[in-house]
Length: 273
Image (cartoon, rainbow, N blue to C red; front, side, top):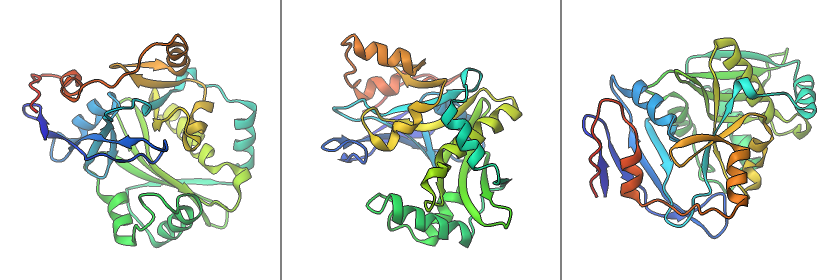
């Protein structure tokens, strides 16, 4: 099954598989490849409509019976530091940021493996070898960078693969030293990317997906100014929660209708099943 948009890549749907976030649910994704001269343009357009990048693929949840996964981003102008986040910045004030081209190193892979073994031993990336890791970090047809965080003795503490959009920065994947959980390095990476966006004059920080009810994703709700993509538009998390509290339906939209709703400037929508 595939759906096409003229002059742009074809859209496909993955087979259902167990959801990594909600027990008992099945996940399905709508996806397309990005490459060539239009890759950056397509990445910018679709990312604003809830899509995420993995190497040269853009994907978005298209589950049959669930709409829990929502793309999330922080509106930098509305963001305010909480007391807890101020403490996180203070705890990590010794870290140095180094940003460069997306290039994988053995030091990164060693940190990545320790991170997976500690936090995601049963996850989909658990068996990833160094060559697959290098592909994840380096295979990109859009503007990307790798940001490393080191201590004063150049010990690698955290890494983030970041895409640069025309309206923000996107945390594609991050991992860090798990030996010191009280340092909250995952939170620190997001806080530093808010700073990067501010310094670059970019309005948003894209966080990936937020899943209500998932402990793995609960930290994203702790940032002021978080928006979620729902029903073709970005709304504040407070608006979405108020919408749910009134008993409103969030029933899945038929796949053909989802494709038809994708906005691609200067193209005509002709979904095919």
